[in-house]
Image (cartoon, rainbow, N blue to C red):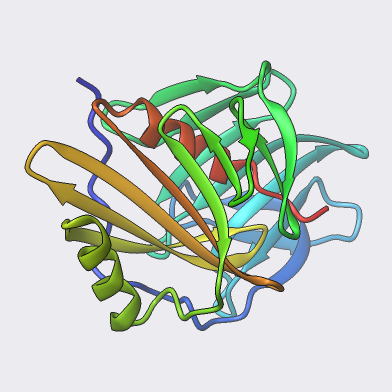
Length: 218
């Protein structure tokens, strides 16, 4: 069975503001830093004030070729190959998720590549996936994690900050004796976007991570 790498314990850098800079070169596999600022550089990076990159888009002219995404500690978490329509997740071992058959879907004020989803009155659903916009809340708060535990009878195994289109979100790993679930919550203009993946195996969890890696602003 493929097992996701452990999520970092505790959130990090969620209150920091990202900056965007174009570089001629990016150094490091994780953490990564840009070098040689250049308005025509091939690398457009979103980075923290200390220069550590959260994600970097690689262009060939005006064509987006690749996106590399990093965790709060700087470790690589996913690579999106837009040309070959696949996402490589930094799991143990690495997992390649083909996304060529996935559709682009607009959810709140974000756009994702997503596996088949069906719109409903409460949001969107797919195979062991559920996506909904809920009332505004602080996804990093102890109240939010307490509500998660109470709602599913789960324990919070670990938590991590993730970013979608440069926006910080809270990623929780929930554990029950017979199942695992991932919940990602991101503030959006109309409330809180909550994405949940669960199931008898890790297929939905892998799909959720790949979907998050493709998230863009419209």
